[in-house]
Image (tube, rainbow, N blue to C red; front, side):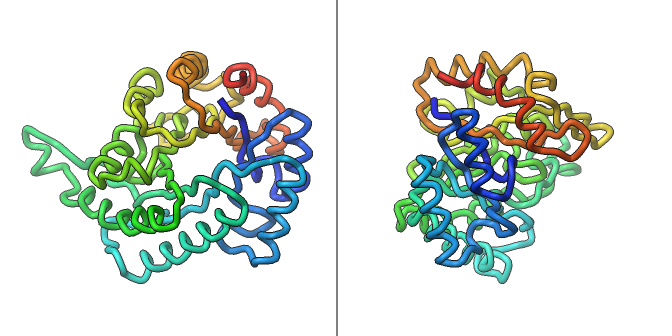
Length: 288
């Protein structure tokens, strides 16, 4: 398995983030924000500078991770102004991906409706009727664009989004018949909010060619109190599951990138300190 990091979790100063990557022998750079700018909004000169820096330092790009389609909801439709805005951003990110050599571009999905399906009465009284059915038409043009441009999209299992579990991610891919161009970006910590057990349940849902990329962090969720706490890796609710997840990925020959997502700080707002507290555990479990 290949190890990397979402660089802006260390620092939005990409040169400094790469220095820290070298310190901990991490190879693959996932880009989200570089400087104060989200991928897809950099100038051509800025993209060339980013590319030169990473190639000179031997850091291939694993994924470009803009928040495509985040903020849309079940009232949006393909071709409406907000959808068009996101599609235009996706085109810019794909153009950047071709320059920096990123094989993957991340997308998100619409804002979550809590109950999508039901039975024995819930289908009448509790389901957000039609919400799920609005999503595939929104994502289909992005899949067509990915096929036309030779890029693979990865849909993140995101907090607060319609796809917030591996089950729903796989269901979307199957409905679009898009396994060739759309994979799952599995973020098992995000899936904790909807109580999908990362292993074995979550992992089983993405076996067989659905998994494209992985984000790793540790959390403790308290859904009744609407509270999420990021924890030092190994000290949250995923702690006991990381090793079996890693063992299963190795056994099944996963050869994609696993990105450490450095969103933990030890109470002082210092995310680089949080990275340093977690990275040895990450490497020990998921490394070669």
